[in-house]
Amino acid sequence: MVFSSHIFLFYFLPVALLLYFATTPRFRSLTLTVLSYGFYSWTNPLFCLLLLGSTAVDYICGRALVGWRALGADGDLPMLDPGGSRTRIQRAWVGLSVATNLGLLGFFKYFNFGVDTANAALTALGFDGFDAVLRVTLPLGISFYTFQSMSYTIDVYRGRAAPQRRVIDFACYVALFPQLVAGPIIRYHELAEQLRARTHTWEKAARGLALFMVGLAKKICLANPCGKMADTAFGAADLHTLDAWIGAVAYAFQIFFDFSGYSDMAIGLGLMFGFTFPKNFDSPYSSASITEFWQRWHISLSAWLRDYLYIPLGGNRISPRRTYINLLVVMLVGGLWHGAAWTFVFWGAIHGLLLAAERALGQRAMYRALPRPIHVALTFALVCFAWVFFRAEDLAHAGDYLRALVGLGDVSDAARLIAVTTRHPAYLAAGAIAAAIVWLAPQSNEWTRRLTVWRLLVAAALGALSIAVMSVEEFNPFIYFIF
Image 1 (cartoon, helix red, strand yellow):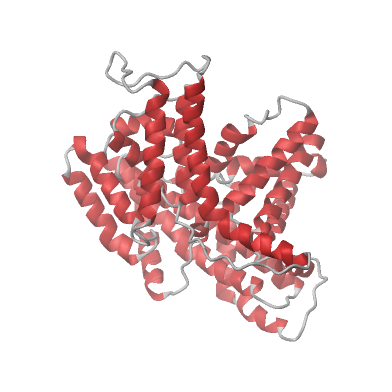
Image 2 (cartoon, helix red, strand yellow; image 1 turned 90 degrees about the vertical axis):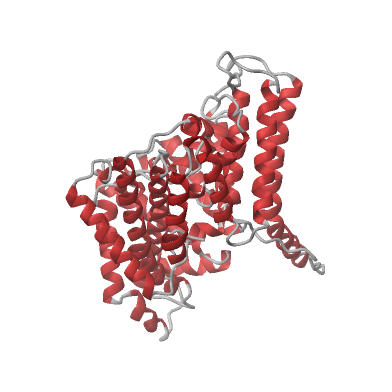
């Protein structure tokens, strides 16, 4: 089930809000947990077993880290000393949590990739490949909830958070449907107090509804038409250079409005249920360097990789050479987190190399003496270049597309037909509106922070327009569902 669907908007969400507010405050976490499992089971009820298993393991590990009978003076579980030493048993518990979550993620996300890679290697060496009896279906959201659940145990181990005593509150944290399948990846300490007690006000609910409607408009009215242009360009056998660039920029807009729109909807839904989630995007295409881009794009994932991988590897506290290696390793992991394919590995490697180069030369050394708008334009061009690998079906396809970008591709008469779609006035208008919003409009999260009657009317109009468009169009994919 996706937020941008009639069944969610007109059936699930109204029923969920009704049941939630009809429940007494003491049992609202239980109601929200049951609703979240119902939401997650819509595609495949068996996926709930994985979610339940990950939740159970991390809850048990978190309790075991401080001792099952340990209680503070207020009846809550104590927090470990952040600077204290840890016993072998404690290290074993946190190791079990990490191994279980990474094992689930590794098997379900990378088993097919491993089999296909092994077959390709055997074929290249002149041997016969093998037929895999088992092919694994990727459960929705597993990349998000395993990282989120695992970070809880690590934070308890590090002394950054006290373990959750109530199993229902912890299950609610892991399964919370607004951000279950596509983030943001919320660390436990960011929601701990809100799980215990949260406020519900008309102002918060109104802001949540407005943010949800703005996010829906991003998805339906901008991401979808940009996606049609991108799909046409990337699906073509050959392209003119102009159409290749239109397709690359259209995909950059599609993935931004698709994912940031979904994040807006998630944050808006959280507000409706009393939760305040951190924002996940901060005008990333206004970045003047790749380093700045990763401080603004998918902030929850960037912060997770920084805190749980980059810093433990040594971060930038060691030699410059090791720092560059750490940056490359982190971005390779980030690429693989997004998808099990060599295209994602190359995408991560490109960003890792650019981050290392900027750190070695200075973030803006490559654009020295140029004004900031030129920095932003060059950074956006580099990001679009890397997006080609993210979008391409395989490395060969990515290579062909890159050749078209620089004018080296083979162009046939059939390429003229592609321009009918990529240069269609309606789609170009949508792309122009997308560009204006990307570089000129205020962020939706900030725009809805101070609501006026005018802004509420604008949000309502955007919501109505989105629902009307959604009811007549068949093209409504969501990119991050495959991750």
